[in-house]
Length: 178
Image 1: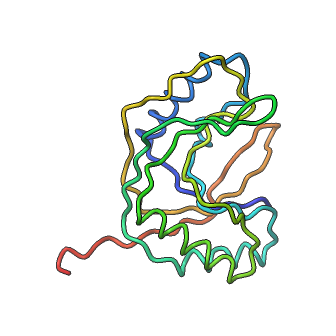
Image 2: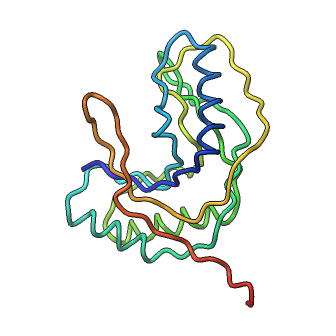
């Protein structure tokens, strides 16, 4: 099974992301655009995993401690590729999000996972192989406070790419008396 760990968003944030995706689609000649239910923020891509690795990923997630994190989407960008680019909605970097991703990555590597070593760039993919002459990149920032991360499986069901949460790890609410 093809696994990754991600942050999934509320319906309100998904609606705003969908508006960005639809705006991009309307100004594009062609592209493969993310399905509304597949818009997420990847923290770690694990690739093909067996049952033992699935359990190791869950264990690594359980070992990660985090408080609620404000995730703000504040820009649109492009990773240039040959015949079409990958357009994304960028997340404003913040220390708690970066710390969560770094801690999770370290625990997964300790558990034996081979992960991407590039600098983490938090983003939500809007479309792949997109060809467009011009696209507005400015946006009014939006987002939400997240308090959960999900272990997701990526699979083709009826020819459609489908992401399903297999396990959820909740963060810890701040103690108002601390």
